[in-house]
Length: 370
Length: 227
Image (cartoon, rainbow over all chains, first blue to last red; front, top):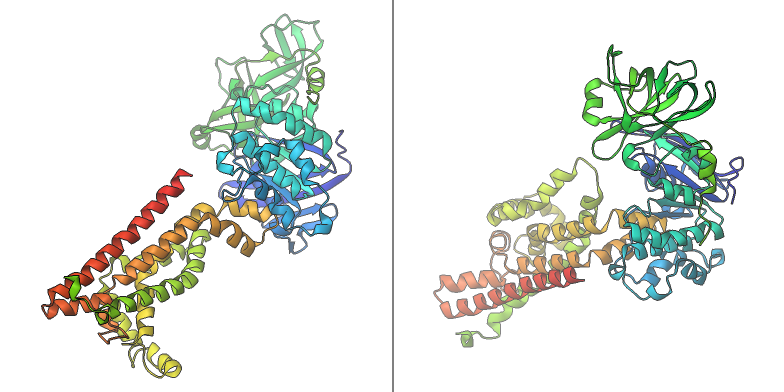
């Protein structure tokens, strides 16, 4: 299902300030297909989804879904009057109801004439047949998420929002639920946002990926382009992928930049290559260090500051050669007084060469429906 | 010793039960919206209101009783209102006792409901809202069923606490048989008159009642935990 980004069915824009955090995001979704929303913790992904569902009200914002205004022009449609499906990370099933009653909760409140999705189809799609009479407390984490997704689908949403539905599950449970999401993707045509930290999940499910940091959508591109160069290892942080060319054995240079060493690099001098730099391997300084252990030192401008887990912040730095990211301790970022547009120096400690054709390989890696 | 208790001696017990039932019913009607507001508000007024609700737990009942006496007396602000409505001030009437008991037992009803709604509300209500349930629908079909334990605790504690009320009754209700002579007042009178047999009988009834009430609360809590 190719995402047609030119014909948005859902268009939304929000601005919301909470303490230091500012959400200022614009997103457009096609009529069908999954948009992956990707970014560090604290980037504002959940807030964006909550604003779309209407459970949170951004003071400034505009949402239109299939031509209907949900917010804007002095209108704010409350969440219970929006045809929306929202699945939380820790799916909230109603504990006093059976799975069947949970599934029917939204549908029961829908005018009979508007019901299009047969309950049996959703039950089959998500493999819920044997769970129907059980109480939520007796279900496994994966089963709970499947029921929550089913409940959202039976609510006949015009917009489906999946907020890290797999994040609370262990690897085995993820593997158990992913085939159902593949089927969902293949069989249902509705605008969907899928939030995940997991690059592999994104590659598998998303048609396009929006990258979010510090309350802003930085880009929204087809999945293969958006995730090119991003590894599955979250610890190393975001990975920058920069155009460069070989300038000698083991040395490369960015456009117009000085040469530096890249492990294992070889190729015809002057030939193009792509250099990958993980956020973990970049630090920054306010003054240009005269002598440092870095491979390269580039003047840069702070473009985004995003909080990740464990008190680490990821700073996006605009250099001459492109955008690189640096992982530093949150306390250090505060002590340095980093802010948007701060002029700093990026210290590159390690760079690797991207395999030729890396991006295209990735693009074909999307698993077929099992 | 209880053999000496006649049916007439049990009149104060029935009066106490009636008072407790009316008080708890009224408190559920008034206290549930209050608990709901406290559970969901981000207002700065939340803490002051919570402190006010909790006051009866720490204040001597005689202090509350004194203020209520002044408030409800013929010259108090509520005096003319009550006179216009029921023909006399609220002091030394059953209605006055109900009002006083509602204030006295307020925290015992509001706090368990508030705690339960805090736990039940939030995400579950947001989920309900995205499933087309408006605020009232979500409250009655999601929040209240999820908070059942809190409501049962509130009813039992509110009832038992009102049954045991003494100081406030003495201040605003006095000792009018059939009107304000509740079980604790009757008990006090028996002791004053050195009628220890009757005092034993009434005390045993209150003791047993309170124990059973608390037992119900704890049993319910355990059953819910096991689910």
